[in-house]
Length: 155
Image (cartoon, rainbow, N blue to C red; front, side, top):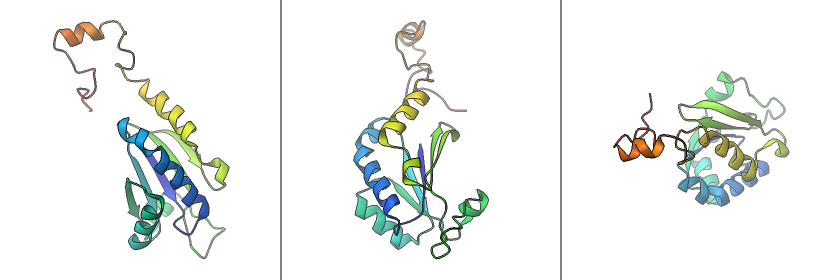
């Protein structure tokens, strides 16, 4: 999963990042990966942002700034909007953090290529990443499919 903690619709950097994610989304969608954006914007503003960038993933509103407080990521340099410092988390199955990008400055945000490499590293940990791995074919042929997508069971 890619989790984006966003400043909000007012921020041109967030707008650009979400445009890039929208362009990358067709690849994300076929790779069994999800994106979620969380912002301190009210829901109607969040929906405007989602529509303006053509995003097809879930946007959540944290108007009470619970995430901002829990993670201690208040952007104190912007008292007008009181946003979160923008971060992008790349999460492994089970919501385990693989990588965190601090996006206070635009160049700290991940590009589609950065995310591609992160997601490749995560997926390459799967036992069925290389179908030539010893025993995988034999297990499959014997009806033991628990190591293959979508048969992997999560604990």
